[in-house]
Each structure stands twice: as C-alpha cells, then as structure tokens.
Image 1 (cartoon, rainbow, N blue to C red):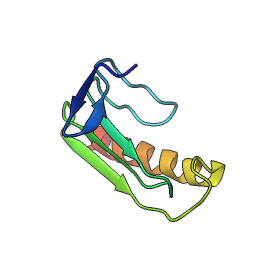
Image 2 (image 1 turned 45 degrees about the vertical axis):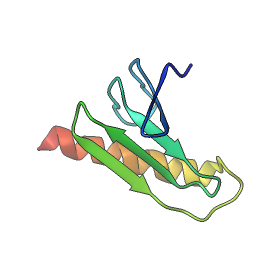
Image 3 (image 1 turned 180 degrees about the horizontal axis):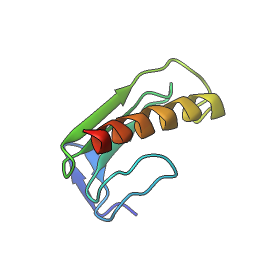
Image 4 (image 1 turned 90 degrees about the vertical axis):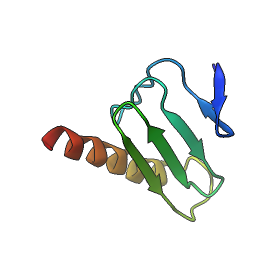
Length: 80
C-alpha cells in the first residue's frame, strides 16, 4: 500500500524487500511501460536506473536482468 508520495513517485514507508536487492525502508521506485526502472534508496545513499525497450511490461527476461542489476548494486555496496 502506498502511504506517501515523494517527488511525484510512490514512497514505500515500510521496508521493501524484493527477492533481489536490499532496498531500505523509504525507498522510492518507478517503472515505465517498456521496462525502464529506477529506485532511490536514501538510507543507503544509492540510486539505480536501468533502461530497456522491451514489451510486454514485466517481461520475465527483462525482470531477470533488472533483478541481477539491482542485486549487483547492493553487492558492491556491501563489498565497499
């Protein structure tokens, strides 16, 4: 459920824990119809953007790439 909005985007007031990645509470996310995604995680001071031109929205291959990208970003943060 969306509790608040931030910069015109839905803000997740509780911890968002997808199967991939380690987003913090308060992470702001957005997705476009062609599987373009971005997120801003203020608690971990990180943001990610992945741009694709793939239909349909939520295509399993596009979502796999997005998951690998997000997981890689957070893995790099842990290693730093």
